[in-house]
Image (tube, rainbow, N blue to C red; front, top):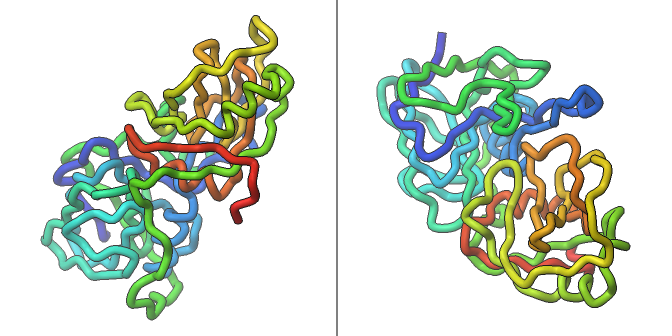
Amino acid sequence: MTSMTVVEPGALSTIQDFGRPGQASLGIGRSGACDRGAHRLANALVGNHPTLASIEVTLGGLALRPNEDIVVATSGARCPGVPHLAPFRVPAGETLRLGLPPAGLRTYLAVRGGIDVPPVLGSRATDILSGLGPAVLAAGDVLPVGTSPRPVPGVDVAPVQEPTGDRLLVQVSPGPRRDWFDDEAWSLFTTQVYEVDSQSNRVGVRLTGESLPRLREGELVSEGMVRGAVQMPPSGLPVLFLADHPVTGGYPVIAYVDDLDVDRCAQLRPGQKVRFTTAHLH
Protein backbone atom coordinates (compact mmCIF):
# COMPACT_ATOMS: atom_id res chain seq x y z
CA MET A 1 0.00 0.00 0.00
CA THR A 2 1.23 3.46 -0.89
CA SER A 3 2.06 5.65 2.11
CA MET A 4 4.07 8.70 3.15
CA THR A 5 6.20 8.96 6.29
CA VAL A 6 6.36 12.31 8.06
CA VAL A 7 10.06 13.16 8.40
CA GLU A 8 9.46 16.63 9.86
CA PRO A 9 5.98 18.00 10.67
CA GLY A 10 6.77 21.72 10.56
CA ALA A 11 5.17 24.18 12.98
CA LEU A 12 1.62 22.85 12.49
CA SER A 13 0.50 20.37 9.85
CA THR A 14 -2.96 18.81 9.92
CA ILE A 15 -5.08 16.60 7.68
CA GLN A 16 -8.09 18.46 6.30
CA ASP A 17 -11.08 18.07 4.01
CA PHE A 18 -14.37 20.00 3.92
CA GLY A 19 -15.16 19.06 7.53
CA ARG A 20 -18.33 17.94 9.31
CA PRO A 21 -21.22 20.14 8.12
CA GLY A 22 -24.70 19.88 9.56
CA GLN A 23 -23.79 18.67 13.06
CA ALA A 24 -23.75 21.94 14.99
CA SER A 25 -26.97 20.96 16.82
CA LEU A 26 -24.95 18.11 18.34
CA GLY A 27 -22.23 20.54 19.44
CA ILE A 28 -19.90 19.45 16.63
CA GLY A 29 -18.30 22.21 14.57
CA ARG A 30 -17.63 21.85 10.86
CA SER A 31 -13.83 22.36 10.95
CA GLY A 32 -12.08 21.44 7.69
CA ALA A 33 -9.66 23.41 5.54
CA CYS A 34 -9.25 27.06 6.53
CA ASP A 35 -8.72 28.05 2.90
CA ARG A 36 -11.32 25.89 1.15
CA GLY A 37 -10.49 27.22 -2.30
CA ALA A 38 -6.81 26.30 -1.97
CA HIS A 39 -7.71 22.81 -0.70
CA ARG A 40 -10.07 22.30 -3.65
CA LEU A 41 -7.47 23.50 -6.15
CA ALA A 42 -4.67 21.28 -4.84
CA ASN A 43 -6.97 18.25 -5.16
CA ALA A 44 -8.02 19.26 -8.68
CA LEU A 45 -4.41 19.53 -9.82
CA VAL A 46 -3.73 15.86 -9.01
CA GLY A 47 -7.07 14.58 -10.30
CA ASN A 48 -8.72 14.05 -6.90
CA HIS A 49 -12.36 14.52 -6.05
CA PRO A 50 -12.53 17.74 -3.95
CA THR A 51 -13.73 15.83 -0.88
CA LEU A 52 -10.48 13.86 -0.53
CA ALA A 53 -8.20 14.89 2.33
CA SER A 54 -5.12 17.08 1.88
CA ILE A 55 -2.49 18.31 4.32
CA GLU A 56 -2.79 21.88 5.62
CA VAL A 57 0.73 23.14 6.39
CA THR A 58 1.22 26.29 8.48
CA LEU A 59 4.37 28.28 7.59
CA GLY A 60 6.02 25.42 5.72
CA GLY A 61 8.54 23.06 7.28
CA LEU A 62 6.79 19.79 6.37
CA ALA A 63 8.99 16.98 5.07
CA LEU A 64 7.53 13.70 3.72
CA ARG A 65 9.02 10.53 2.25
CA PRO A 66 6.82 8.19 0.14
CA ASN A 67 7.38 4.44 -0.07
CA GLU A 68 6.22 4.43 -3.71
CA ASP A 69 6.16 7.05 -6.48
CA ILE A 70 3.42 9.63 -5.87
CA VAL A 71 1.97 12.65 -7.65
CA VAL A 72 1.41 15.75 -5.50
CA ALA A 73 0.54 19.43 -5.85
CA THR A 74 0.66 22.44 -3.53
CA SER A 75 -1.58 25.50 -3.43
CA GLY A 76 -2.16 28.45 -1.12
CA ALA A 77 1.05 29.91 0.31
CA ARG A 78 3.99 29.19 -2.02
CA CYS A 79 6.76 27.23 -0.29
CA PRO A 80 10.33 27.33 -1.67
CA GLY A 81 11.85 24.00 -2.64
CA VAL A 82 8.92 22.50 -4.57
CA PRO A 83 6.86 23.36 -7.66
CA HIS A 84 3.67 25.28 -6.87
CA LEU A 85 0.20 25.21 -8.44
CA ALA A 86 1.27 22.32 -10.68
CA PRO A 87 1.28 18.53 -10.28
CA PHE A 88 4.69 16.88 -9.91
CA ARG A 89 6.09 13.45 -9.15
CA VAL A 90 7.98 12.48 -6.00
CA PRO A 91 9.95 9.24 -6.45
CA ALA A 92 9.86 6.47 -3.85
CA GLY A 93 12.32 7.12 -1.03
CA GLU A 94 12.90 10.77 -1.92
CA THR A 95 12.17 13.42 0.72
CA LEU A 96 9.77 16.22 -0.20
CA ARG A 97 10.51 19.39 1.81
CA LEU A 98 8.42 22.56 2.00
CA GLY A 99 10.37 25.72 2.80
CA LEU A 100 9.10 28.82 4.63
CA PRO A 101 6.65 30.73 2.40
CA PRO A 102 7.58 34.41 1.87
CA ALA A 103 3.89 35.37 1.92
CA GLY A 104 0.69 33.70 3.06
CA LEU A 105 0.29 31.33 5.99
CA ARG A 106 -1.23 28.03 4.90
CA THR A 107 -0.13 25.67 2.14
CA TYR A 108 -2.26 22.74 0.97
CA LEU A 109 -0.47 19.62 -0.19
CA ALA A 110 -2.63 17.13 -2.06
CA VAL A 111 -1.43 13.68 -3.09
CA ARG A 112 -3.15 11.76 -5.86
CA GLY A 113 -5.59 9.40 -4.11
CA GLY A 114 -5.92 11.57 -1.02
CA ILE A 115 -4.73 11.04 2.55
CA ASP A 116 -6.65 7.88 3.41
CA VAL A 117 -6.77 7.96 7.22
CA PRO A 118 -9.95 6.67 8.93
CA PRO A 119 -12.75 9.27 9.01
CA VAL A 120 -14.20 10.48 12.31
CA LEU A 121 -17.91 11.40 12.20
CA GLY A 122 -17.79 11.45 8.42
CA SER A 123 -14.66 13.56 7.97
CA ARG A 124 -10.87 13.25 8.03
CA ALA A 125 -10.47 16.84 9.25
CA THR A 126 -8.42 17.67 12.33
CA ASP A 127 -10.41 20.00 14.61
CA ILE A 128 -7.94 21.81 16.87
CA LEU A 129 -10.65 23.19 19.17
CA SER A 130 -12.60 19.98 19.88
CA GLY A 131 -9.82 17.46 19.37
CA LEU A 132 -11.87 15.50 16.82
CA GLY A 133 -10.23 13.85 13.85
CA PRO A 134 -6.65 12.75 13.23
CA ALA A 135 -3.91 13.99 15.55
CA VAL A 136 -1.70 16.89 14.48
CA LEU A 137 1.08 15.41 12.34
CA ALA A 138 4.24 14.32 14.14
CA ALA A 139 7.59 12.94 12.97
CA GLY A 140 7.31 9.24 12.24
CA ASP A 141 3.62 9.25 11.33
CA VAL A 142 2.79 7.02 8.37
CA LEU A 143 -0.01 8.39 6.18
CA PRO A 144 -1.83 5.92 3.90
CA VAL A 145 -2.53 7.16 0.37
CA GLY A 146 -5.73 6.20 -1.44
CA THR A 147 -6.49 5.91 -5.14
CA SER A 148 -8.35 8.09 -7.65
CA PRO A 149 -10.09 6.91 -10.85
CA ARG A 150 -9.91 10.41 -12.31
CA PRO A 151 -7.27 11.39 -14.89
CA VAL A 152 -4.53 13.79 -13.90
CA PRO A 153 -5.42 17.07 -15.64
CA GLY A 154 -2.96 18.27 -18.24
CA VAL A 155 -2.16 21.50 -16.40
CA ASP A 156 1.36 22.96 -16.42
CA VAL A 157 0.46 25.60 -13.86
CA ALA A 158 -2.82 27.00 -12.47
CA PRO A 159 -2.94 30.78 -13.06
CA VAL A 160 -4.56 31.79 -9.78
CA GLN A 161 -3.88 34.72 -7.48
CA GLU A 162 -1.47 33.85 -4.66
CA PRO A 163 -1.45 35.27 -1.13
CA THR A 164 0.63 38.39 -0.58
CA GLY A 165 1.81 40.25 2.49
CA ASP A 166 -0.06 43.38 1.39
CA ARG A 167 -2.88 44.98 3.34
CA LEU A 168 -6.03 42.93 2.79
CA LEU A 169 -9.37 44.58 2.05
CA VAL A 170 -12.18 42.36 3.34
CA GLN A 171 -15.87 42.64 2.44
CA VAL A 172 -18.36 42.49 5.33
CA SER A 173 -22.10 42.80 5.88
CA PRO A 174 -23.75 43.85 9.17
CA GLY A 175 -24.19 41.05 11.70
CA PRO A 176 -27.16 40.28 13.97
CA ARG A 177 -25.75 42.45 16.79
CA ARG A 178 -24.81 45.48 14.72
CA ASP A 179 -27.31 47.38 16.91
CA TRP A 180 -24.97 46.95 19.90
CA PHE A 181 -22.73 49.54 18.23
CA ASP A 182 -23.59 53.08 17.16
CA ASP A 183 -22.88 54.51 13.71
CA GLU A 184 -19.62 56.07 14.89
CA ALA A 185 -18.35 52.68 16.10
CA TRP A 186 -19.46 51.02 12.85
CA SER A 187 -17.64 53.70 10.88
CA LEU A 188 -14.51 53.08 12.94
CA PHE A 189 -14.87 49.34 12.33
CA THR A 190 -15.04 49.79 8.55
CA THR A 191 -12.39 52.49 8.15
CA GLN A 192 -9.55 51.71 10.53
CA VAL A 193 -6.66 49.44 9.58
CA TYR A 194 -6.31 46.48 11.93
CA GLU A 195 -3.23 44.33 12.50
CA VAL A 196 -3.26 40.54 12.81
CA ASP A 197 -2.34 39.42 16.32
CA SER A 198 0.16 36.61 16.92
CA GLN A 199 -2.48 34.75 18.98
CA SER A 200 -4.45 33.96 15.82
CA ASN A 201 -4.98 30.29 14.93
CA ARG A 202 -7.38 27.91 13.15
CA VAL A 203 -10.16 29.02 15.52
CA GLY A 204 -9.98 32.64 14.48
CA VAL A 205 -7.99 35.68 13.38
CA ARG A 206 -7.49 38.05 16.32
CA LEU A 207 -7.02 41.70 15.40
CA THR A 208 -5.46 44.65 17.20
CA GLY A 209 -6.34 48.30 16.69
CA GLU A 210 -8.55 50.98 18.23
CA SER A 211 -11.16 49.44 20.53
CA LEU A 212 -14.84 49.77 19.54
CA PRO A 213 -17.21 51.07 22.23
CA ARG A 214 -20.57 49.32 22.72
CA LEU A 215 -24.00 50.82 23.15
CA ARG A 216 -24.98 47.92 25.42
CA GLU A 217 -23.12 46.19 28.23
CA GLY A 218 -23.35 42.63 29.49
CA GLU A 219 -23.32 39.44 27.45
CA LEU A 220 -25.79 37.56 25.33
CA VAL A 221 -27.30 34.18 25.90
CA SER A 222 -25.05 31.98 23.76
CA GLU A 223 -25.94 32.10 20.06
CA GLY A 224 -24.95 29.92 17.13
CA MET A 225 -21.66 30.86 15.46
CA VAL A 226 -20.58 30.36 11.85
CA ARG A 227 -17.38 30.61 9.83
CA GLY A 228 -16.82 34.25 8.87
CA ALA A 229 -18.56 35.75 11.92
CA VAL A 230 -16.77 38.76 13.42
CA GLN A 231 -17.27 38.56 17.16
CA MET A 232 -16.60 41.52 19.43
CA PRO A 233 -15.42 40.55 22.95
CA PRO A 234 -15.28 43.07 25.82
CA SER A 235 -11.86 44.25 24.62
CA GLY A 236 -13.61 45.88 21.64
CA LEU A 237 -11.13 44.18 19.30
CA PRO A 238 -12.59 41.86 16.65
CA VAL A 239 -12.10 38.11 16.28
CA LEU A 240 -12.84 36.69 12.83
CA PHE A 241 -13.87 33.05 13.10
CA LEU A 242 -12.19 30.49 10.85
CA ALA A 243 -12.68 26.73 10.40
CA ASP A 244 -12.36 25.56 14.03
CA HIS A 245 -14.64 28.23 15.52
CA PRO A 246 -16.85 27.33 18.51
CA VAL A 247 -20.41 26.24 17.76
CA THR A 248 -21.87 28.90 20.08
CA GLY A 249 -20.70 32.17 21.59
CA GLY A 250 -21.90 34.87 23.94
CA TYR A 251 -20.19 37.94 22.48
CA PRO A 252 -22.01 40.10 19.92
CA VAL A 253 -21.37 39.43 16.23
CA ILE A 254 -20.98 42.84 14.62
CA ALA A 255 -20.47 41.58 11.06
CA TYR A 256 -20.06 38.65 8.70
CA VAL A 257 -17.19 38.37 6.25
CA ASP A 258 -17.96 37.43 2.65
CA ASP A 259 -17.38 33.69 2.23
CA LEU A 260 -14.68 34.03 -0.45
CA ASP A 261 -12.86 36.56 1.71
CA VAL A 262 -12.78 34.12 4.63
CA ASP A 263 -10.49 31.96 2.48
CA ARG A 264 -8.25 34.97 1.90
CA CYS A 265 -8.24 35.78 5.62
CA ALA A 266 -7.05 32.23 6.31
CA GLN A 267 -3.75 33.29 4.68
CA LEU A 268 -3.18 36.30 6.96
CA ARG A 269 0.07 36.29 8.91
CA PRO A 270 0.74 37.95 12.28
CA GLY A 271 1.56 41.61 11.73
CA GLN A 272 -0.30 41.83 8.42
CA LYS A 273 -2.78 44.69 7.95
CA VAL A 274 -6.52 44.27 7.36
CA ARG A 275 -9.37 46.68 6.64
CA PHE A 276 -13.08 45.86 6.52
CA THR A 277 -15.38 47.42 3.93
CA THR A 278 -19.06 47.22 3.01
CA ALA A 279 -18.24 47.92 -0.66
CA HIS A 280 -18.86 45.04 -3.07
CA LEU A 281 -15.48 43.57 -4.05
CA HIS A 282 -16.39 40.48 -6.11
